Every structure is written in C-alpha cells, then in structure tokens.
Length: 196
Image 1 (cartoon, rainbow, N blue to C red):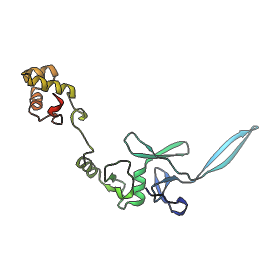
Image 2: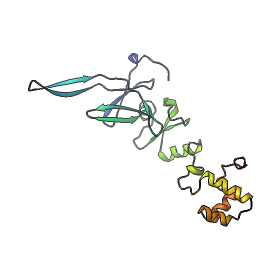
Image 3: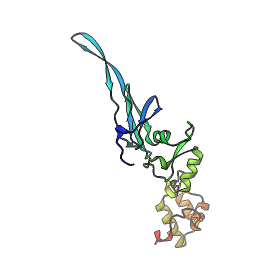
Image 4: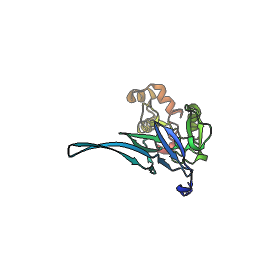
C-alpha cells in the first residue's frame, strides 16, 4: 500500500454490523467518531455526561482463518469485521450482500483493491482449488483412515511380499484400500523416495 496523508484523503464510510467504518484509499480503516453517555455517582449525586470518542485508526490483527480483522467497541460490545470486505465494498464495484470477496493472487493478507473481486461462494471455492489453496491430500483429508507413517509401512511390507489382505486386517481398512495404495491410486502424493 502506498503512503498517503490521511488528512488530505476523503474516507468512504461503509456501514456494516451496525457500525460506520471509514475506509481510506491507502487501505487503512478508521472507526467513526461516536458519543457515549456516561454516568457516575459523586458525593451521593448521580452525574450524567456525554463523552465524545474521536475517530481513530484501527490496527488489524490476523484471525484464525488467516484474514486481517479490525475491531472497535460500540456500547459494550466489540464489533469485528474482515478488513478485505470493507476495502472491497469501498473500492471494488459489484457488491451484493450474498457475494464473497476473492483474493485473486490467493494471499489472504493482500487487501489491495486490485487484488480483490466479488464472486459467488461456489466461484470462490473453484478459484481456491484452481490455484492450489485447498490441499486435501493424505492426512489433510477429513475422512482419512491411515496416517502417512502407516502408508509408508504398508508400502514397505508390500515390497517385502506381505499379502495385501493381511495388511488390510492389521491396518483395519478394506483390502481394496491397500491395493489402491500398492498401485499408486491412493496416497500418490508420497513418492517412492519417501520409502527408501
């Protein structure tokens, strides 16, 4: 992101989750100014006053999912929103509430407007698969029955002449799974150099 003088730029206000976020052309996100009604008891008298909270630049943090998130307090709640959604709403045409934001280069932290586009969830998922962001090989596959170490041992045992049916019983899998491992149809991402 290039450096701009925030005072000379005009922010684009984006309303999301009941908060108005100020998005600047350099990608920085600021909270909007707000007022808070406060009261205190002093010498037995309740005093009520309004405190003005100025706009301030929000520091993004990285969420568990790997995206930049910004947050601010509104009343007694912390409101969080993905930074790339705010930037896309401000600078990328085509926003509709049901669309998701796609990072064209696959880098979740690259929130430049030219790297963002609006896609349906299905198209976004297709894009993730096409550029290799989704990896469900081996133990990353949610329904895997064997570990990488078990597959290495099965392949070594097959080379030593142990019958596939016996290995299937020992591993607790169907014999067809062992045959598919033997012929390189399953766990093919493990090359032979792993087993030597």
